[in-house]
Image 1 (spheres, rainbow, N blue to C red):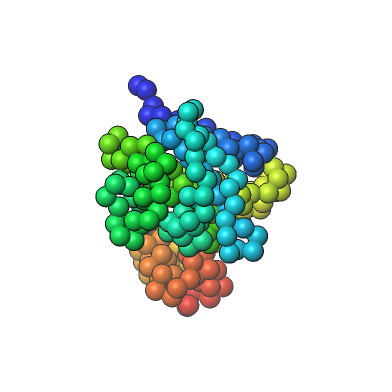
Image 2: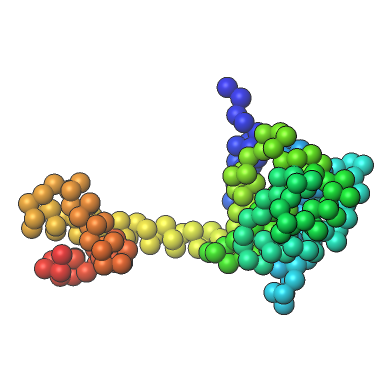
Length: 232
């Protein structure tokens, strides 16, 4: 059975994130793959400027024969997406809404038909955007918006990652923390099961429900239960 191309692309990029990758090269790869997967004329990856008031082009992929007007990516809606973390969708520059009319006219004059701008966000903090411009209306071909946002998310993750040694150390610490928390959760479930005379599965559900009601994590609630069984 053939695996759909978007799944293959995401798998390849995700694998690269586990290696000692070069950030610039990975971002270039994401930009190129995004353009090709959407059959787009132009794809641009932009990041917020250091002063956080503007954006800068980091990578771009251009279809052979197309001449991009780069001033387009320094205007709304691209800047809006990069600075606020919002998704912008203009399906057809010929019938764009009044809000984007001037932008759409300029884009149409340069030979473009539609665009999607997918924000790069990390913990809801906007880092930039991945802008995809097609020569035809967006819906004239099957184009998966969720796939575009997934690629933008992977780009944001790549920007947040340290060198491979730092990542390996952080992963080891996180794994140990998870294992330790799991042990505490199992102990707390045992306490609840014994005192409330219920089975372990039910005790686990009780743990989750009570932690949610208190606005804490299951691990935090479990620590309290292990320390003081009456706290349950």
